[in-house]
Length: 386
Image (tube, rainbow, N blue to C red; front, side, top):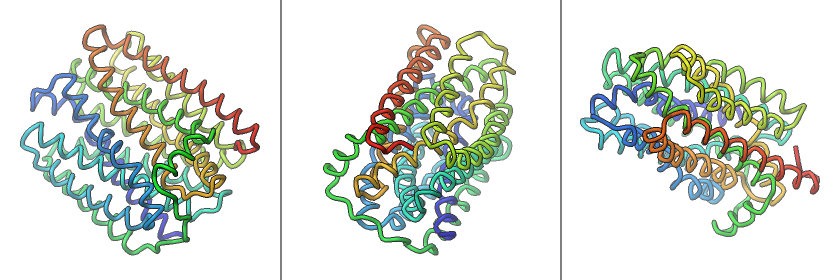
């Protein structure tokens, strides 16, 4: 189990590292390649778009051939995207690198989480997922730092480091055991059809989409607004990194609290926090306060994730399925929300203003949390809520 955890942790760390390295560099990329807000949104959305296409087939495949083999493929894609990030000569190549990273993320996320939860007893899943949430936050700390390093030195140096970390993750995955035999899922359409009728899965999907709606709006608009005010990429990266440090603590605590109060309550706390962040940004704030929001939003995704994934595994166990496709569905909805939110928010912000865009994002989060409560009540009626 320890070697499986290390392989999953390394894979998740590299994914978070590469994903968040781009956020503080958005103003720099926008200036270098003359990107508009909409084009910057396309760059930001490239990862979740590719993730969206690959994650569900990858999760199902993990239930057929074993998650370890699938994780190897995903980690290899991280290596390729790192090379392209290092030497991208144009905005088009940069977007291609982002798409390849998203393919690797979709493959790695679905299979890695199934590999972890499938080899962890139900009573220990909240703690295991909480620890991985902390690892993701550590990657989120390192990601902006990598972006700042790229800004201060060169992209070749920074993303060569990312590539080396990807090699380590691949080696750990190859060295880890396949683990416990997992249920062999039926055909993909049948597996998905059974999962999407389960109230705990629907509850989890609401949480995943709430995270995307809240975070994507902040990740797109706040750095661009700060860049327009002359705030440096380094300052933006430090704020995001500080939030991720809080996320390490938040994920660790959430995993342990979830064992006592239940996964749903933990996820709800994360969702409420994510909804409050864009609501705060509706109001005119000085630059230091916007940076403060980038710090404050950091722990809420690890908290939500720590509650969300055990709910999915409980549903999969109830249906006699492996965890790969259920985990993939949550990630697919998350990536779809993360892809669509910037593309929907950017035109609104550009034509009407950032405050309206933030208000819409906060309202969407509130509606989704209400739906999650309804589905959880349905699960409790079946004696399945946790």
